[in-house]
Length: 93
Image (cartoon, rainbow, N blue to C red; front, side, top):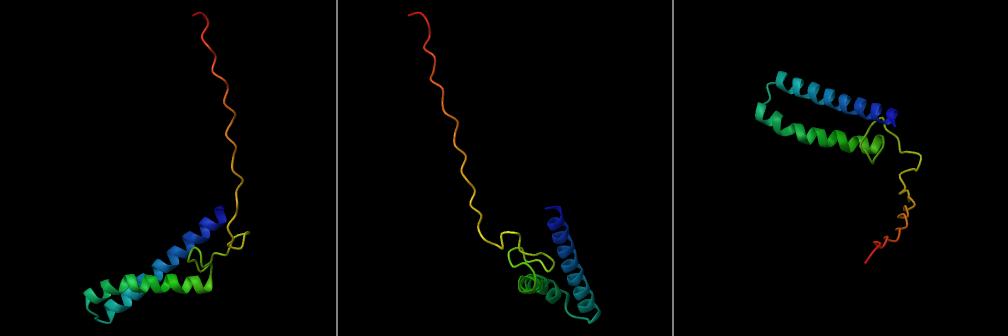
C-alpha cells in the first residue's frame, strides 16, 4: 500500500508541476491573467482525463496500476455478531 501512496504523490506532484509550467508560459506570453486563472481547472481536468487513458483509470494516475483484483469488486465475508447471553434473573423476590 505504501508504494501506491508514493506513486500517487509523485503523480500529483508532476501534474502540479505541469500546471505551474503552463501558467508560467502563459504569463510570459502576455495572456490575460483572468484567462489564465479560468484555464487552470480545464487544464487540470485534461491532465486527469489523460492519466485515465495512460495509467490507472480508477485513480487517474499516470504511474498507478490496477491492483491485484484488476479493478473488480471484492466481496468481503460479513462478520457474525456474537451470540447474546441470557440475562440473569435477580435473586430474591
